[in-house]
Amino acid sequence: MVAAGTVDDHTEPALTAFLDYLHYERRLSARTLSGYRHDLEEFLAWLRDHGGAASAWADVDGQHIRSYAATRHRQGLAPKSLQRHLSAIRAWYRFLLREGRVQTNPADGVRAPKVTRRLPHTLDADQLGRLLELPGDAPLDRRDRAIMELFYSSGLRLAELVPNGRNGNVAPENTAILAYKPFLLAVIADVALGQG
Image 1 (cartoon, helix red, strand yellow):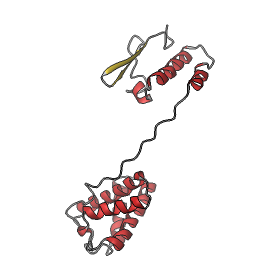
Image 2 (tube, one colour):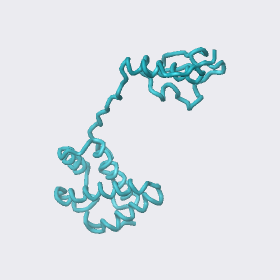
Image 3 (cartoon, rainbow, N blue to C red):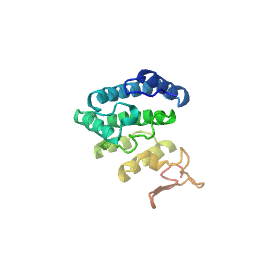
Image 4 (cartoon, rainbow, N blue to C red):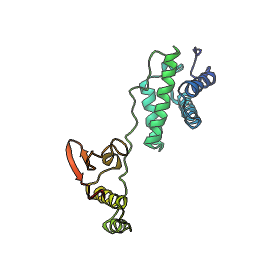
């Protein structure tokens, strides 16, 4: 069990025990372990400067975690990085719970700002035209052109085109049926697949 004490007391041995747990029991990569160590050391430094009455790990509450997250966000930490910091803190407190050092995980209800999703880059009509004019009349070439045309015209993602693995969408009659949400989106017949 990790010894009790202030946030600074026994932190290095406890952190080492935590990282060993992540490495040997959870099988996390060396890069993830390094990131967790870095994130937790930053949190510890912030607690020393801004923790106020939080002199022991058990004294840290959700407000401390939210304040830390807000401070890091104001300092320009990207939302995705902030999510990683909070993930490290949550995992740290789960470990402390497991070891009996704290009674609750103060990071459980704290959320990072949403990550803005970037839209994928799209092809214009001329670029697609050049793709579809690629040479070859073999069945696989015709199939590939039909798939590219379907991608472009419908906005499908690859996971939606082939949802159950490489051959998961081919019916016994060599007809691919694609379902998108509850609606039938497209049927590519044998001819489009190069079978006819």
